[in-house]
Amino acid sequence: MNIQLTQKETMLLQDQKSHEEMCIKKYNNYANQAQDPQLKQLFKFHASQEQQHLDTINQLLNGQLPNTNQQQNQQQNQMQSNVNSNDSDLCQDLLMTEKYVSGTYNTVIFEFTNTNARQVLNHIQKEEQQHGEDIFNYMQQNGMYQVQ
Image 1 (tube, rainbow, N blue to C red):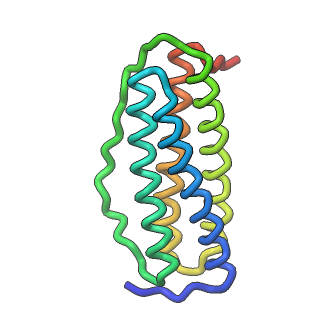
Image 2: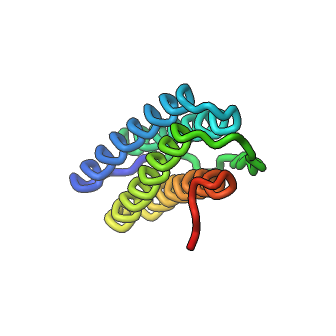
């Protein structure tokens, strides 16, 4: 299905495209820096999902409505490792990034006129929120994030 984007929708998607590109770079870079093998695996998994998000945004920018019937293979890892301060810094940065990116999707969703495109963007936002939850859970389980 093809869609016609407004100028504002195009501008907002271009912003999201740059956010997704940065997420991909961060997750891949941080996967190489992380000490804990489980954290490396989590970052690589999220990098691949961020690439899917980028592909979806590019499809929308090309006027194509992507298929959202994608299988979600969410890995629930029981993560226990030796905490290292570098891993903690990487997690903290990515958690802040996911909070920001998820919030920007909220604005984009409300600005879109096409209901199906809104649903596609909402699907991406839910995955961004899941990335944040995965990182939060890892941090909490490893003493990097204290809920008060």
